[in-house]
Image (tube, rainbow, N blue to C red; front, side, top):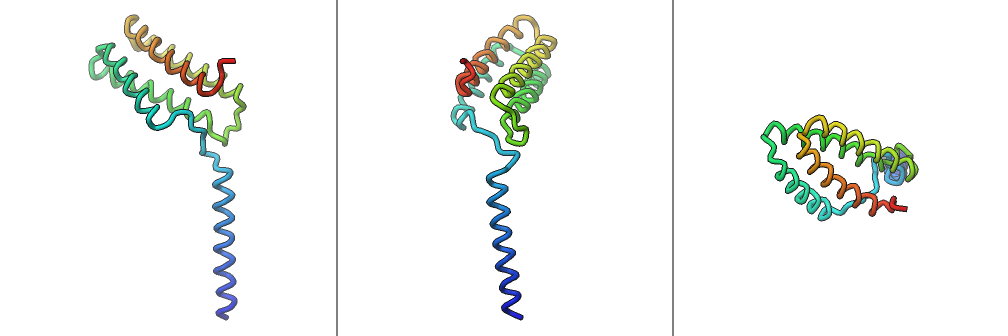
Length: 136
């Protein structure tokens, strides 16, 4: 009886280890890392300085950052393995999201502030293109 129990426990551990190994290799929520943590910190600080140049009130800043976070979150999800996008598809979808972000920002911001947003996000877009080798 102890022998059968031991074999069942051993079998369960082996199956569990196999399942973890398989899901680690095929995690549909895993994405490629484009920016290191320090890169992200530097970009966020730089972009924060750009937002300060807009001199938005609290509500305007909250609306701006909410919209920005919505789109950048969608952009960050393009690299998920579960979608199976090719590089060309990722680039196309990224560009569409940038266009949609800019259209929404144009409606939200004054012309002067929209100019600041567009220039600062253009620089971020250029960095993404560089890191993804999309400049070709």
